[in-house]
Length: 210
Image 1 (tube, rainbow, N blue to C red):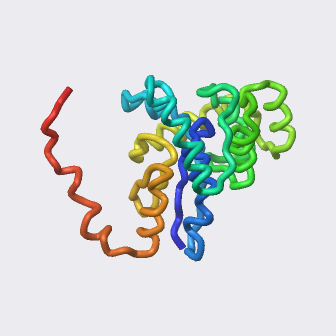
Image 2 (image 1 turned 120 degrees about the vertical axis):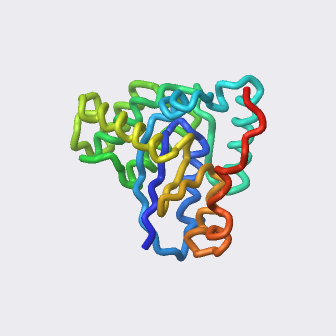
């Protein structure tokens, strides 16, 4: 059985789509998944990059694209009333349901669907309170332990090579993006392509510096 670590931030529509698609993508394979919340903003800040919603033009395209991807994959998705929004309350709420840095699929599903279905304001305090009431809690979502856990998750993800979400780590290899799911499945199926082609790309010389 292969162990997959699924790095996610509820802010990301691509993470939502990948979360919903994962069981179908990996149907018939033997695997387990650790769902690990990270702060995408912290990951982007570390790498000095910006999210697609922070780039003029790309923002509109991204929103159209994720709605199309959901339609094509038969995954219900609606844009929240406001986006981007501050995902910290959702991330901390998720980590309050567990004594460590990983959450179960029920918690991830509950929060993802709260954000990406219905077209409502994900940051609305009343909705956050109602969501918190539905989820089991073993830690204080506003406590120092949960805040430290999120920072630790994010720092460890960066150290592992995560540069965005969704990202999936297995056997020390990192796969990224909704469109990376077929590649992940192929690796788990034992495709020999990975033995011949995974390593070496980091040695390609960089001929353009900005």
